[in-house]
Length: 255
Image (tube, rainbow, N blue to C red; front, side, top):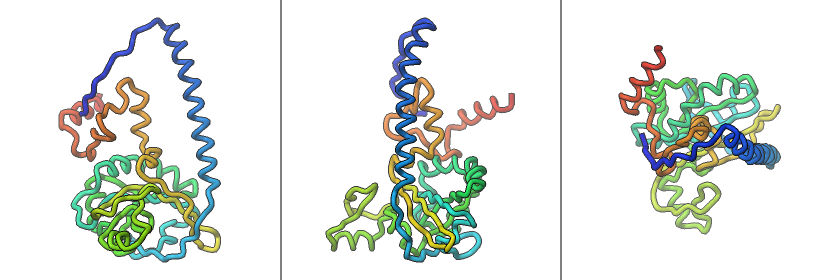
């Protein structure tokens, strides 16, 4: 567990604490209202029709992007970092996807399909999914340009094109040095109309994906907060935390 310097705040009376808490509440309400306003602007973004036909490997065979909607009109894709040659998925992406199964119980009943896409072959994704004990749908974009087109994978071909063009590579809507192959994480959202046409409505990258990590919100309520020296330095795959911590947690669950 990451241990950072923790300075105890002063201890005060209940009345003093209540006054300080009410001052903070004013700031919290400002943030809540600002988030509401940003969400409204997000929904007002213009759309781009997806003209290219992407094909994915899924447990149900080959499917197009339109097929991934599973009968719903809205699709959220989490771009999970898992390269074709990797043996394990990204620890931070794994942390985020630990949150998916619970929320999917509700999204599927609210006209939203949520799934993950990675470039690794389907067999690798299936094996890692079993290890992590996940239920959400995870499909492979191996062999397609889906990851490159949505700026979450940088292949040798991408780098070669960037070096020969003026556009270069881009991640999180900013220039990205074309130095080596790599995977990045992100979210992309799509809409399918009654005619079956698919539109790209939104994408976010880097800390734009924090909105999906419920554990951060819980930690931010605590005195120590996220207790990290650098962003998510404490995160492990959930089967790789210290045994002592797991034993302690399991013992409490049984009382």
